[in-house]
Image (tube, rainbow, N blue to C red):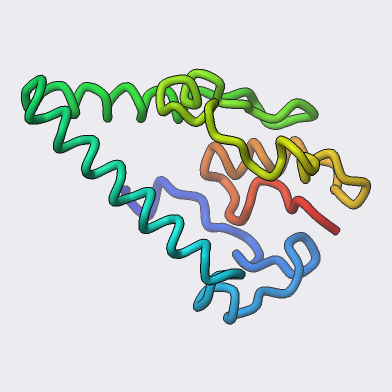
Length: 139
């Protein structure tokens, strides 16, 4: 992009009043050691599934599935009171069969300590006009 056609951002990307104090420790280590093990196991399982599908149906089939996954991951509601559920993506990847903590404990978005969504800021983030998370989730 040409610098004459862009509008400079006013303020800082790390807005302390809006997003709170940022800690470096959260960027370095994960909250629990099992999260990294689960993530790596999931990635290994997905790669193995792609190899099996490629050997069975040909090289184009895993690429078509990846394209479908990318399309379904971008389809979502505008920010607001009702969050995107990504039902199509969950059905496509088989995540509907998983039983997560939100299924038996509670969805964190339904907590009493959740801040209301700032619709204007969330749309600015989605359109690339502002930086930061679309909405800080907890107080």
